[in-house]
Every structure is written in structure tokens, then in C-alpha cells.
Image (cartoon, rainbow, N blue to C red; front, top):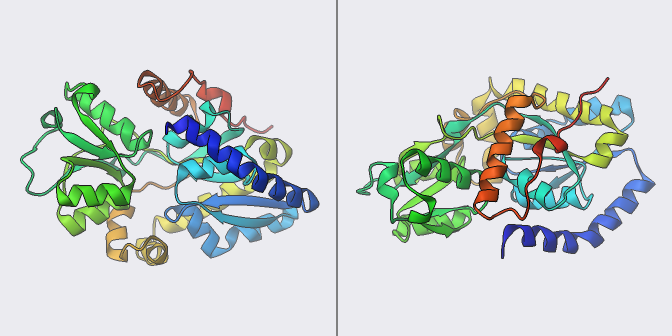
Length: 316
């Protein structure tokens, strides 16, 4: 099933739930519904309770909703089941192509070392150029899909010259460990976990190839109606970022139970993470547009999109 069909089907399945949730929200319109994943700064924000304190003067409360990854979070944003969330570079592109009503509210600085092309420690493969003709596992239409395409291009290898194996992280790791694939393109914290557990070697990470940014996204209708609430959410994330960058041990301990990854392994991933929230500028928009155009050229998007049209406008 292609990615856009998945978005459409998921949107249909979520429409009823979204409608019920929207009705509840209308009965209590002083609520912001925040989507989060098991790894990242938003789950830290949830644990600290600081967002609730920041929203209290505005008369708003928070509802937290967990998602396994970026694509279903975007699907929920699309049907109005949440008002705010976070994802990497790729999910918003596919969400926009599927007609999702959201705006880019902010981004974190690049974390290029937080994604990589891995090979087993005993693999004869020593360079990206050696991947020609090889079977490579990765998530289709994800940040690492883009990393792979650009890394191959830099090494003079055509994307058509490799054999893709579209696998989610758990399945990809199993295939990687048993030798069913020659390489695996993956992001942290799964990247760090594989390095520690299997001794996997890095052929290339995103340095000089792909920025690997994290984006914060707001429902367009909610942002238009309550921009001060989105400002407060972003300010709370910035505060948790300032704490997290100086408290790696505490962050690793807090994230470990939810991810199932030991704290010492998470510390490796956290050292490759970046902190700080900023509004999108022309450079970031242009780089995100480049990713969208790359996916379009691969035939993964049904039509061109204009990333700039989905960027939140600055307040007065």
C-alpha cells in the first residue's frame, strides 16, 4: 500500500473518532490536545507538567495522546483529533500532500548524526559505493529514505541500483541481525541500540548529506483560533529543551521505561540530539522543499507541494 493511500485510509478510519473528539472539544474548547511519541522532548514536557502551568493563565488545559511514530500523528492532526504534535522531516511532507490542515510551528536544529547507514561489524562493505547491488532495509518515505537517496547520489550510485527492503525498525533490525539485508538505514534511538547490541558499523550518517530536523506542527484551524496557546506550547518546549541539554543522565532515565532501551544506550543517542526551538526561516523551508521534491521525483508523492504554504505566519 503506498503512503498516500495509507494516509487516506487512516484518515477515514479516524474520521468518526475525530468527529467525536471534536464534539467533546466544542463542549470544552479550552483544551489543547498534544500528540507525542515515546522518544523526544514532548514526552519530557508531559512528565514535567510544566505545560499545564504555562497554559493555566490562558484558561486552557492539556490532553496528551501517544502515537507510535510520525505518520499516524500526522493522520490524527489531519482529522482534527489533535491540535499539536511533532515529527521528523518526512511525515509532514506526506501529510501536506494528502491535504492535512496543519502549519509548521517550529523546528529544532539539525541532528545529522542521529541517523545513519549501518552494516554488520563483519560485513565486507566498507563504503556507500559498495552498496551497489545490495539489499538495504529502511522505512519507505521516511527521513532515512531521503538520507539513503542522497548518500547514494554522493557516492555515484543510482537509487535504482540497490534493492530496497521497506521495513519498520523492529523488523529491519531482525533482518539486519540474521543477514537477510546487507545494510540498514535507521535513526536514533534505534541506531544507538543497534550499535551497542550488535557492534554495527556506520558507513555514513547525515553529516554533509541530510540535516535530520525535528518539526513542531499545529492544526491550522486551532492555530488560527488560538495562536497564543501555540506560542505557550512552544515556549514550554524551549524551556524543557534548556533543561534537557544539561541533564542527559536524568533525560535518559526518564525516557528508558517508555522506549524499552537502557539509559546508557539512550545517552549515546542524546549526545547526537540537538536542542532549541526556532520558527522556520527561508533556509529551512528551502531544505524541506528539497526533500519534498526528491520524494516527488521518486514517485512517492502524487503532486508537487509548496512547503512555504504550510509555514506558520509570525504574530503581530
